[in-house]
Structure formats: structure tokens, C-alpha cells
Image 1 (cartoon, rainbow over the protein chains, first blue to last red):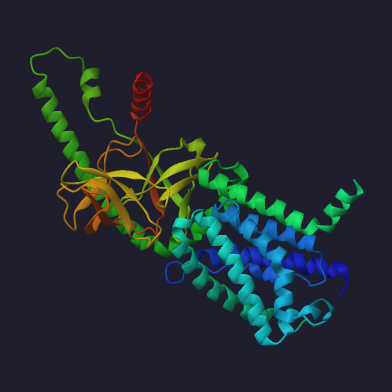
Image 2 (cartoon, each protein chain N blue to C red; image 1 turned 120 degrees about the vertical axis):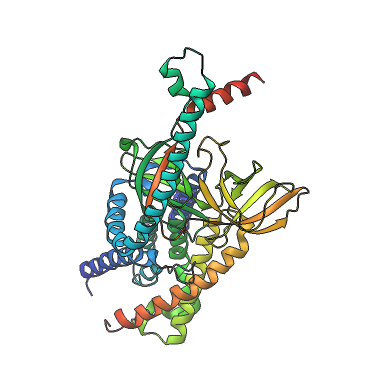
Length: 170
Length: 287
């Protein structure tokens, strides 16, 4: 894939993920409090060879856009930057040191590794997000509860999206 | 010098992360403290317009329920108006009998109605700890901060931020929300808060034990805060427990409004609010 089509596909994914999050996901509430956050999909699927600087900047922009629509200040932005920054460590942890030299894509990796990667990334992202949102230790039970349930739902949705939308493009 | 530059280049990823992360946190803190920057709030033009489209589409799905609520509210308000007018018109002339009193003074004795703006909620959250409502009326429609927000069924929040055409209200489902309410039957008052639990469970604290409260009682706003006029419906008592602090009660309250489905709202401003606030400020300065 040459670099201009890669840029276009990143931009397209950014816009699609953003629109799905604010137009559909933010209006879904399962069991009264679980609001799936699928926009981590963009950060997880950012090209492995892409620059970390651009990943962090675009994640920040994505998070900030979602904050604007939710009136949450900068919690999504901060949590997204955190996930973008820690992503190489998680990649290393899930797929082994050699992930950088792999030509294969994350959605084509063995399903066990994918689950570890997505789940660890989403849990960390949601934990940072809900802690910042609560802004105080007084609500730690609620923070953990939200993190647990929301992470499960977000992870399942992201893994499904991997299988349905990203698999074939080798 | 070269070492410093090299240090920056070597750690550029971490430094960028640190910078963006702290920017995010500072924006969050500003939002929590209420000092919004104008472009990071859903009151701006782009987000406001998109919210308006969305809520227009959604409102069709709930027309029946909304109509029923509005009819119920109309009936209640008509009864109230009838009562107030007839009792005032009867009692004032009797009290002033035999005095030469100009009409303006009689008028000024009558109840000052609060200023009410009719509006719609275009975005509503209830699953976070700091929930807000975005409303489709702004400064150009006469909305100012500290106006009360009520649905046809009861109070739902307080306006905190206003832009030209939109405004944001702190929902009663916000851990920073505090509203003074009283029992309909007596004048004992307490503070209505939310502890971040279910959206249909509020907490009435600081209400004295001697208050004659029973399960099923209606709570209304107390006129002591300058935001809501006296007597706006709030919710019903669902549970009463002794509080940790002696002589006080912890009371669970279910709001009359289903906080998950709000569309039509009234923005309420007490006409006397400014005068009361200035007077109170003056008295505090002198003490």
C-alpha cells in the first residue's frame, strides 16, 4: 500500500469511527449505564509502521471531538492519548517482540492474541477515562464497575469489527 | 546544549504524550470547575446544530408520551393559577378596605410570576457522574446562568453555561448538584443531592429528624435558593433512614421526571432573584 492511500484509509477510518461513536454509540445505554466506546478501534488499528507522533496527535483529536459532543472536558482526549502512547508496549506484550517486522495485520493474527491485545488496551483506556471523569477517589467502586462492564462490551464490539471489516485487506 | 536537544529528540514520544495528556486533564478540570472554554462545550454552533437534528428525529418517537405529560402539566398549572388568582383577588381588597390605595400598589402585592422560557433538551446524559443537559435556547432568547430547568413533571437541573443560541444545564443527576427542597406538608427543608447511583434515585440529606416525613410524600422546591421559586414539584420519598449525623435523616427520593426521557422543558427565572442576591450580599458585607 503506498503512503497516500494509507493516509486516506486512516482519515476515512477516523471519520467513520467518530461518526459511529457520536451518532449511535453515545445514545446506546445497555443495562442503564453501559455506554460502549468503540472509537478505540481507530487507535488499535493504526498502521503498525505509522509514526507514533501522528498516532498520538490523531488520537488526541479524536478524543477531543468526542469530548465536545459529550461535554466531558478532556477525559476522552487524555485517555486516548494514553492508549496511543502505551500501544507499542501492549503490542509487544500480546504479539511478541517481533510484531514490528510482521507483515501480517492485527485482525489476521491468532484470535487469542487479538483478544489479549484488545481487552488489555480497552481496559486500560476505560480505567483512565472513568477515573478522570470521576475526578475523585470517592467513586472508585463506580469507576471499577463502569470499567468492567463497559470494557467487556467495547471489546466484543471491536473484535467483531476486526472480523467483519478489516480481515480481508491483506 | 546538544545533550538537551538530544534528550528531547530521544524522548519526543514521551514528552508529546505528557503534553497532550496534561492538556486533556486541564480541560477536564476546567469543565469540572465550571470554567468552560467556549469551544469545548456542546453549546457551540457545530455540535449544537447536529444535536438539534438528532433530537428532532428522536422526538417523533416519543410524541405520545410527551403530549400526555404536557396535558398533565397544563391541568396542574391551570388549577394553580385559578387558586392563586381567586384567593389573591378576594383577600387583598378585603384587607385594604377603607384605605385609598392606588391600583399599582395592589398589583405589586400580587404574586410575581417567574419568567418562564419554553425550550427543548437536545442532548441529555444520565450515565456519568457529572451529567448535563444541552438546551436549544441561548443568550439571544434571554437565557442566563442560574436559571432553573424543569420538565412538565418536575425539576431537572440548573443552567450553568450559556452561548448565543444554546445553553448547558447541570442535571440533578450530577454529583455536584445541590438543590434545596422541602416536604409539601411542612417547611422542614433539606438538600437534594445525587450520589452517582441509579438515575431514578436521588438523596435528600440534612433534613432534621423531626420533619414529619413518610414514604410516598411529595417533595417540592423551597423558595430559599434564588434559583427555583417555591413549590415546584421534585419527586416522591421512597425510603427513609437515620443519617450518620445525629438528628438528621437520609431520604431516598424518586424524581417525578424520568431523567432518561426529557424533551420539553421550562427555563425558570425568579424575577426577585437579583434583588435577593444583592440584599444578601450587602448583609454579609456588613457582618
